[in-house]
Length: 117
Image 1 (cartoon, helix red, strand yellow):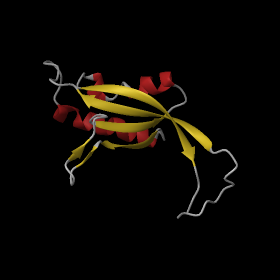
Image 2: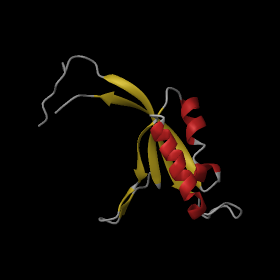
Image 3: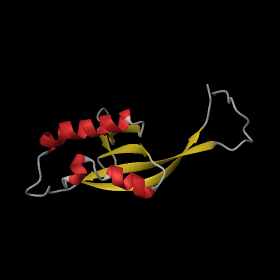
Image 4: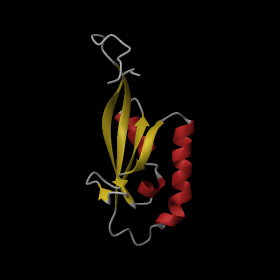
């Protein structure tokens, strides 16, 4: 078991974040760009969030080795933002969501900062 390096009676600091869960729109809108056309803009969008220090983590909700998927959606990212309005303004600019290929759900998450070894 990891050794706790802080006083367990002291409250943990929290960082306000938002879970941004994406589900695919099926069937996709007829006039929407393809997923392939939006791959690069999506990666550039995520890279920008990372360079701004806003991205805590991101990825697909699956495990290929176990052929496992999630009923939570297709993919997600964790966004550092102080308010829901700020998080939504950023999250809804994700290129696939903006093009109508994904539905974005934004959920608050107060990330606890524990220190252990």
